[in-house]
Image 1 (tube, helix red, strand yellow):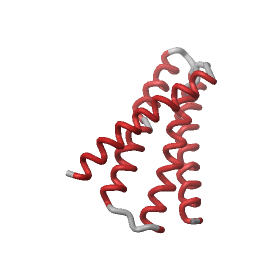
Image 2 (cartoon, one colour):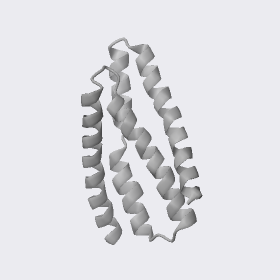
Image 3 (cartoon, helix red, strand yellow):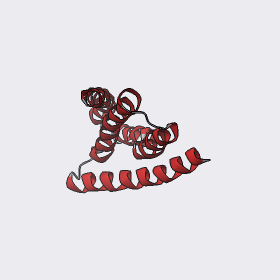
Length: 124
């Protein structure tokens, strides 16, 4: 029961963090490209790589805490569905290049971010 409650609370906080970060980035970069979603997903990948490495290789962390942070907070913070929808909308608007940049750029940047998070976690 502790794990379920922790995931729920962390998920609510992750969703609020996503809303805040996406909104702040989108207000600063008001273009047709979904920069807010990109920033959210890449920072989420970075933090996931860092936290999982830290909690599994460097520290002894209770499984419920690991689940709360990764499944709850970061699961609610990052958003594959929004990435997919925004890419679809770009395609629908005829912005094929931007749609491709969004999908491919997000995947590449996410992989690099996870790698950097893992490296940072192992450096501690």
